[in-house]
Length: 501
Image (cartoon, rainbow, N blue to C red; front, side, top):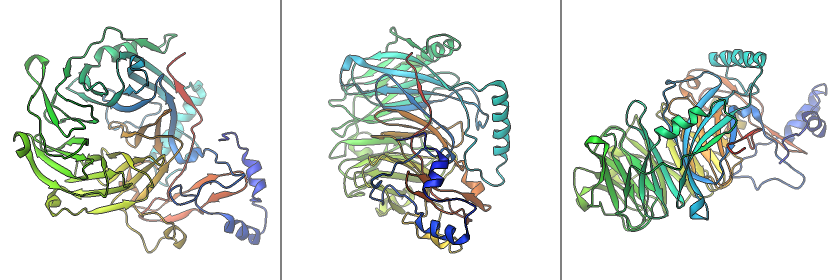
């Protein structure tokens, strides 16, 4: 990948001199096409992609000492609905190393995350003017590089999944599902305090050798991946394993955690994901490699706790799910590479509301947008992150060239540049900010236009789809449309942040 492609060379290669006649422009237009990774065969000989910064409002890459296949965003006290530049965020991640003794829980603070001035603007976006002013101030003062500070908790065994929650105030904890068949809960407050103390220090990380788990659930008989905190009944954790058993852990008086020894059973194979209802404290849903979706009521014990089953909901293993915070909807993704949206009000009819077929490999992660009820993000083993809006439809007034794109009209954005994508998460306090993790790096991004689609639906806007290679430029013309984004595509970011000096 060549991130230093000279724009003038590219323009010369493809003869895009603006001074040429309209006939030359027409001929050049015929050479342009849109690259869609799930549809195109890939780069041809002599072609090379270049990072397009205009696709993002903010884009950074950061690395940990060991690959982290799972992470979560820690809730902070910096405020809600934050748009100020530079941004700051906190994450917790779990490593998966081939050597059990080399694993760790990473509690990290990412600071000085600046916006991207070359991002394609939205017409009428007042925040862009504010962003530009902030960036000018930063340049005047001398912009600093983004920084990551981290507290490292040594951990024995590879970590399959981490999930964090806030018990109120500044009490942040994390649950860890490990390959050693344990579900453990850690208090993160000491680690967060240690990270704060690194501000201005020469070192970027500190070891937390004395940290011990608050609780260990050893009732599971095999490892698993499904893990979820109840956001209504604080301190309640559900964990599920590859034998199809579900255990509930509750926080009792004095902050003591106790795991109920009677598991919920019903799935015929491994449970891949689990999530609590955002509105009903007793309900949770699971998906399994047995291809079924099951809705459970935690007030009922054992097998009877399953109140609804959708068999064969996908044609193969179901890997992930997400429960909509605002509407009675869940979205699921499977090994069949399909994404399906289900209404819980009609779950007993065993028919999905919508099905999206774009990814070409198994879906690895899904998450609804925290403030937009119709928007979700997905990742797949085809090394793509996609953003969708299920409210979007084809518009007969849209340019025919756009309508000819062989992608669903609900597909808003495509992000590339990572290998073996495992998880994606939205930041609940910073609108439109997303973080992804893969085998080599984690990436933090905010797409352009920002993912605040209520504005998009009200007015026209312009958006450019551009990907540059050495011998050709694939680029759609600027399109005017009312109800749809043009897909944006980009690859490798310009900066990578590391915590180890």
